[in-house]
Image (cartoon, rainbow, N blue to C red):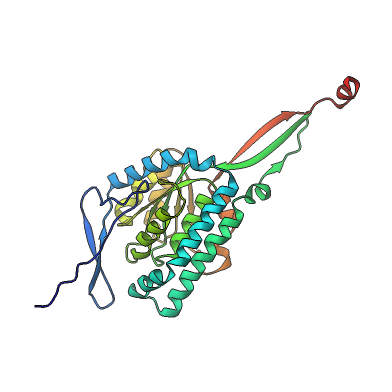
Length: 294
C-alpha cells in the first residue's frame, strides 16, 4: 500500500509558546502543482487578543533593557538564522521561488538583522536633540518606544518581508504582534522557532498566520495596540485601518510601495516611526553663584 505522508501543522507563536489556534481552524497550503504541502493555523480574533496580552506583558522588560543588550539579541537572531539558512532556502523554493531568489532572500534577511543590531544603541543619538529655550534650562528631546505594534507583513514575501517588518520595531524597544503572509507562511513559523531558540524573551514577537481580510480590523481596533504598520496594497483594508485607529489615536504607517530588496527598506527612520518623543527640562545652575560658593 502507498504510504500517506504526515503533513506538518505549522502552529502560531504567542508568548514564547507554539499553541494551535484557539478555534482549531486551519487551511491547507498548496504548491504550484496543487499538492498540499502543509497545514497552516487560521488565526482568530481570540488568538490576536491573546497575543496582545503577551506583548503587553513583555513590553516593560524589553523596553527597559540596555540598548546594547537588544543589539546583542538581534545579532544572536541573525546567527541562528544563518545556521538554519538551508531550511529557509528549502521552504522558499517549496513556496515557488527560484533558487537564486531564495538564496538572495535568506542572505538579505540575515544581513538586515545585523543592520538593525548595529542601530540599537545608535539611533537615540541621531534622533534626539537639545532644544533652544528662552529660560535658564536645558531642554532635551529623546525617542522612547511607543508600546505594542500590530504588523500586517508583506503578502508576497515569506521571510524578508517578515524580517523587514519586525526588526526595526523590536530594535526600538517595542513589542509586536505580526500577521504573516497567508500564501507563503512557512518561513514565518520557522522564523518563530529561530526566535524561540535565541535570547529574545517570550512575548516580544508574536506571530500569527491567517487571513488579513478577517483580522485587519481587529489589529487596528484593539484598544491596547499603540501603532499599526501595514505592508500590503489593499486600499479597502488601509481605509478601515485608518478609521479604526482613530478610536485610540493609534499611529498608522502604510508601506505599500516598499521595495524589500533595496537599501530603502532598511533605515533608522523606520525605527523612529514607532517611537514617541519625550521632552524633559532641567534647570541650569547659576554659574556666578556656583563660583562664589566655591
